[in-house]
Image 1: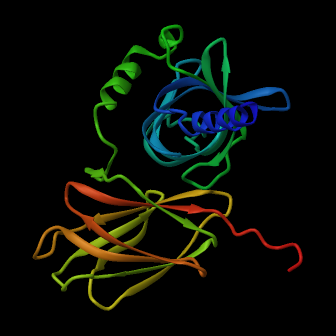
Image 2 (image 1 turned 30 degrees about the horizontal axis):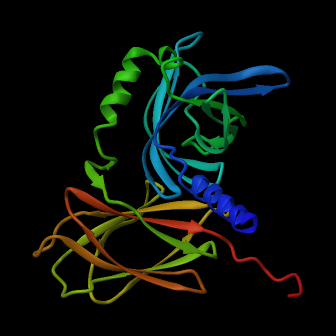
Length: 294
C-alpha cells in the first residue's frame, strides 16, 4: 500500500503546481540601485486578466507620487513554469511623466518566483528592459503580493477603481477584443510566416502585429501565398502575433490561412478576424537541445 501511496502523493503535488491560479491583482513595487543609490522606486501593480493553463496576459500599472509624480500602464503576456513566471511587457498604453525630466517609462522583462509567507502569495524577482527609444533601463528587483485586505490601502483609490472596472472589460487592441490565443511551439528563432486565402478571394486585408508593434501592414489576402520572415528574440520565450482585420472584404468575416514554419515543423491554422475581434497567436520559443556528441 505504501508503494501506491507515494506515487499518488507525487501526482497530487504535480497537479497542484499546474493548477496554480495567477489571475487577479498583485501589488508591490520596483526598486533599482546603482552603487547603493536608489535610482528607481515605484509602485507596481500586475493585473492578470486571463490565464489559459500556463499562459497569462493582462495589464501592468506603475505609480509614484513623491518626490516626482509619474504613472503609466502597459500590456503584458507571460509563461508559467511551476513556481516561476516569465513576464514580458508589450506596449505602453499611457505614460504621464513630467516633460522637463530625462526619465521615461521602461518596457520590461521580469523573472519572478512564486512563494508563500504567512499564508500570503508573493511574486519576487528581477527585471531588465528598455524604453520605446531603445535606451536601456536600470535593472532592478520586483516585490509583489497578491491583493488582499491588508495591502489594499497601498493602491491609490483612483487606480484601484480603474483596476476594478478594468476587470469587467476584455483585453482590447485597436478597439477590438482579443480572441483566446492559439499557442504554437517553435524551436528556432527564425520563423517563416505564410499567409493566404483559404477560400475564394474576396478582398480581405489584414495587418499583423508582433508584440504590439507593426510587422505587416495592409496585406491583401489572395490565393497566392505571401511569405514573411520573423526573427524572434532568443531571450524571450513568448511572442504575440495579432492579426487585425483592416476590412471585412465582400464576405464577412475576414478569413485567411496562416502557416508557421520554424525550419523543422510546420503549423497551419485558419484565422478569422472581424471589426470586433482580432485573432491572436502566441509563438512559444523553446529551442531544440543539441546532442553533446553532435
